[in-house]
Image (tube, rainbow, N blue to C red; front, side, top):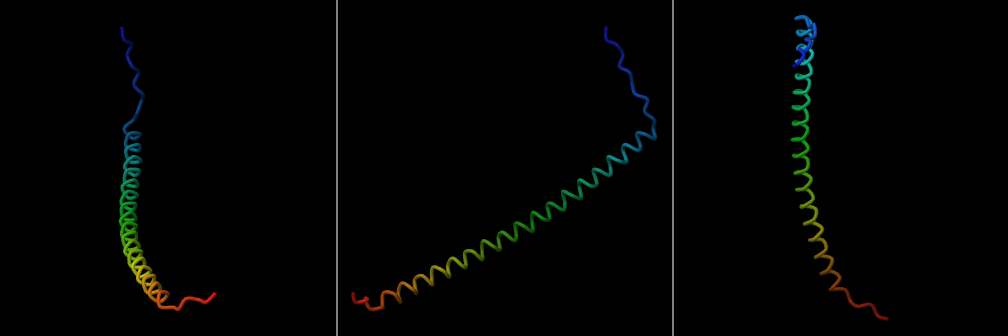
Length: 80
Protein backbone atom coordinates (compact mmCIF):
# COMPACT_ATOMS: atom_id res chain seq x y z
CA UNK A 1 0.00 0.00 0.00
CA UNK A 2 1.23 3.43 -0.91
CA UNK A 3 0.83 6.11 1.68
CA UNK A 4 -0.71 9.33 0.41
CA UNK A 5 1.81 12.06 -0.24
CA UNK A 6 1.08 15.10 1.89
CA UNK A 7 0.60 18.27 -0.13
CA UNK A 8 2.12 21.46 1.16
CA UNK A 9 -0.25 24.21 2.13
CA UNK A 10 0.56 26.69 -0.62
CA UNK A 11 -1.59 29.72 -1.10
CA UNK A 12 -2.33 31.43 -4.35
CA UNK A 13 -0.46 34.52 -3.18
CA UNK A 14 2.64 32.44 -2.46
CA UNK A 15 2.48 30.86 -5.91
CA UNK A 16 2.00 34.26 -7.53
CA UNK A 17 4.99 35.60 -5.63
CA UNK A 18 7.14 32.64 -6.64
CA UNK A 19 6.06 32.94 -10.28
CA UNK A 20 6.84 36.66 -10.27
CA UNK A 21 10.30 35.93 -8.86
CA UNK A 22 10.90 33.29 -11.53
CA UNK A 23 9.75 35.70 -14.24
CA UNK A 24 12.21 38.32 -12.97
CA UNK A 25 15.01 35.76 -12.96
CA UNK A 26 14.07 34.64 -16.46
CA UNK A 27 14.02 38.23 -17.73
CA UNK A 28 17.42 38.82 -16.14
CA UNK A 29 18.81 35.66 -17.71
CA UNK A 30 17.48 36.65 -21.14
CA UNK A 31 19.05 40.10 -20.78
CA UNK A 32 22.40 38.55 -19.83
CA UNK A 33 22.27 36.14 -22.77
CA UNK A 34 21.58 39.02 -25.15
CA UNK A 35 24.40 41.08 -23.68
CA UNK A 36 26.80 38.14 -23.94
CA UNK A 37 25.80 37.51 -27.55
CA UNK A 38 26.42 41.17 -28.39
CA UNK A 39 29.79 41.10 -26.62
CA UNK A 40 30.69 37.87 -28.40
CA UNK A 41 29.83 39.40 -31.78
CA UNK A 42 31.95 42.46 -30.98
CA UNK A 43 34.84 40.21 -29.99
CA UNK A 44 34.49 38.26 -33.23
CA UNK A 45 34.65 41.51 -35.23
CA UNK A 46 37.67 42.68 -33.23
CA UNK A 47 39.40 39.34 -33.79
CA UNK A 48 38.73 39.46 -37.52
CA UNK A 49 40.15 42.99 -37.68
CA UNK A 50 43.21 41.95 -35.66
CA UNK A 51 43.79 38.95 -37.92
CA UNK A 52 43.55 41.15 -41.01
CA UNK A 53 45.98 43.64 -39.46
CA UNK A 54 48.33 40.80 -38.56
CA UNK A 55 48.31 39.53 -42.15
CA UNK A 56 49.04 43.03 -43.43
CA UNK A 57 51.93 43.45 -41.02
CA UNK A 58 53.31 40.00 -41.83
CA UNK A 59 53.30 40.90 -45.53
CA UNK A 60 55.10 44.17 -44.79
CA UNK A 61 57.72 42.34 -42.72
CA UNK A 62 58.26 39.86 -45.56
CA UNK A 63 58.69 42.72 -48.04
CA UNK A 64 61.14 44.48 -45.72
CA UNK A 65 63.09 41.25 -45.29
CA UNK A 66 63.35 40.83 -49.06
CA UNK A 67 64.56 44.42 -49.49
CA UNK A 68 67.15 43.91 -46.74
CA UNK A 69 68.34 40.69 -48.37
CA UNK A 70 68.80 42.55 -51.66
CA UNK A 71 70.68 45.38 -49.95
CA UNK A 72 72.89 42.94 -48.06
CA UNK A 73 73.70 41.07 -51.26
CA UNK A 74 74.92 44.33 -52.84
CA UNK A 75 77.26 45.17 -49.99
CA UNK A 76 80.93 44.38 -50.56
CA UNK A 77 82.40 41.58 -48.50
CA UNK A 78 84.36 42.72 -45.46
CA UNK A 79 88.11 42.23 -45.77
CA UNK A 80 89.68 40.13 -43.05
